[in-house]
Image 1 (tube, rainbow, N blue to C red):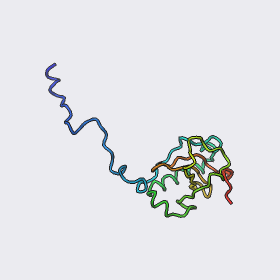
Image 2 (spheres, rainbow, N blue to C red):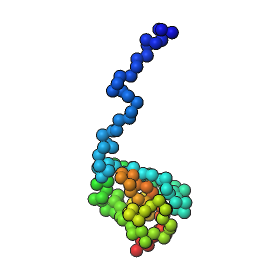
Image 3 (tube, one colour):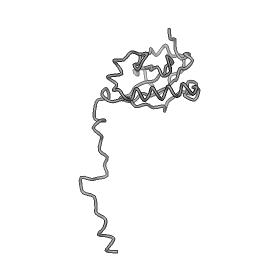
Length: 140
């Protein structure tokens, strides 16, 4: 029993169980690449309604956006890798209750000009709708 006891070294004081924050996550959200969440996608405009080519385009768009910071994305045209803000009153679907009036809705194009619409909180873009048939809002 005493032989085994000597083989395991207790951790040093500075090697505690607490997690260290990676330097990237200490930066301003504007300097970080976007993160994406499908947590609140609405059923009528879900990714499951998309065709295979639209799903591929979506993944490609996420990859390309993840190579830029939010500050860089803000400088890009809305029909390429940029986005546009949408007025809340233009949305024809019900807006989830957890989204308060002060939250801006934004649209990225994910497949040609078809938008994915959601909102941003810090570095995360929460996707709510995949508007593949252009029925979510008036596209003018």
